[in-house]
Length: 137
Ligand code: FES
Image 1 (cartoon, rainbow, N blue to C red):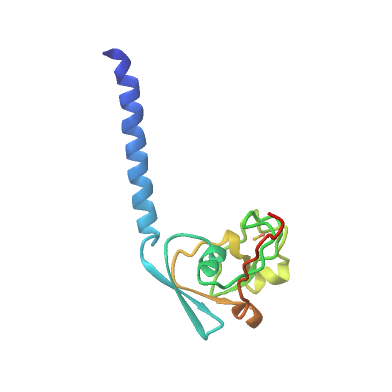
Image 2 (cartoon, helix red, strand yellow):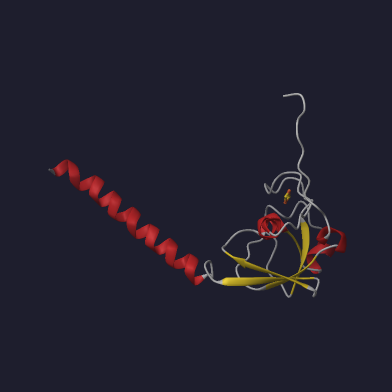
């Protein structure tokens, strides 16, 4: 029976860690409804704790992204209004000092923790999704 003690302690420890992580996510607003205000004329409701890039994509607003959100292309820039958070190390290679002062961040590296205001080029709001078919197969 002694051989059950260590696995039991590990399982108990993992349950405690999981509970703490769930509480932290709730405290950070992970499950409350938030709004992304775009260009002061479009509101996107969002629930969850995903990135701005993915939240906009769910609403068919396609911010350029060549790397799929892996922070390697630098195409997914958005300007966050009233945001004073520092750049993440993954953003530093793509955001100039001038852009940083204006609140520009990579949308794939920015989580939607609360209501937020962003500025996007107008053309992105009218971009359409197209499906294609491979006729060779
Ligand atoms: S999607 Fe490529 S850097 Fe954000």
